[in-house]
Amino acid sequence: MRSDCARLFQCFCLAIANIVLCVACTQQSIAQEAATKVEDAATTDEPTIDPFTVPDGSADAIIEFMQGLSKLKPEEGQDRNAFIKKLTETMRDSADALLKKKPDEQELTLGNRVLLISLERLAEMGDQQAAKRLPKEVARAKASKVDGIASLGWQFQLVGQLESWEDLNEKSKQDFVKKTLKQMQEDGFRPVHAQLLQMTSEALQDIDPKYAGAVLRGSIDLMKRSDNPQLRNSVGRLEGTLRRMELPGNQMEVFGTLLSDEKVDWKSYRGKVVLVDYWATWCGPCRDEVPNLLKMYDAYHEKGFEVLGISLDETAEDAQSYIDDMDIPWATIFSKKEADRGWNNPMARHYGISGIPTAILVDRDGKVVHMNARGRNLRAKLQELLGDPIEKAKPEDKD
Image (cartoon, rainbow, N blue to C red; front, top):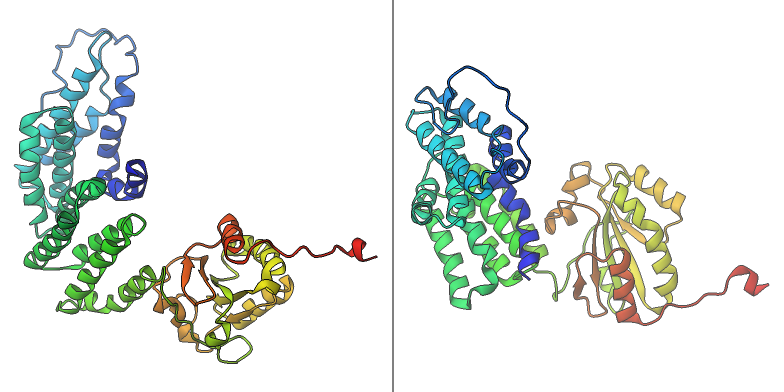
């Protein structure tokens, strides 16, 4: 489970480490460079300058010094762990020096990022002072009015909680959601907070759907009460995301007009296993899946399997032409209003669809049983729900 969590939070953690390319490379290359043997340094008569001495200069000079740290390598025979620790301490000291220079917003954000990452690395190395200082600096960053710094502070806190989620009891999980929402509200809820909560909800979705929904519901509530028009305008999209998140095990609502101009009769599908397939002709993975869908339809249709497509194409001609070329037998929903096509399709907005293909499988009772029913997933689930596929005679067998 812990390795699964690490993969789920990888993108979240990368957002923290993405400082400025040169500085990020500094941090990411430390271990690799420490493992590389040093080439013989060229002899020189110039006096030796300590490469770990932070310059007492301008903000630009300190940033240039940070960039230079990435080129340092341990001397032959030097303890690698000691070298890495010394380099990380210098990064911390450089960040402290930069923050004292009254830098502009970009430099201020950079300094905070380097500082927090360096303190975290040092704490992992057993540095007690760094471990004690880190939470204070995280709290300070969270309270910043600069979005980049506030986001960084919150990410450090949220990732720490999420990585240990499996070890938390029910009360601790409840407190985490409650306290996070309360503090963001007290700090003045703004778009950066909403973005962080959505990332948190997505990270929890496959691990603990209950709390993934709780985080998203809390965010939506704060957005509705906000005076920020950007937040209020985003409520509908997140409500759709929450609606989709809560689909597993529950009824799915399907509505719209078919390419044939008829209204879709969702009730008529009850008693069948139905794949609701969001697709478009411009979506390569969607087209790649069609042969498998046709094969599964041919094998299971007579046993009660049906497909209902939802096209996110911009024109009916594009969708219908592809359907005719591939000889697709199932019905497809397509909005007649130009303003409601593509990602604005009402069914896409209703469930917060932000990527395709999205293939949702519904059982005979109308309840969602799989949110990614494609390829092997679809075959396995149809086998479970409908049994063995129908073996149809080949043309030569009939002869």
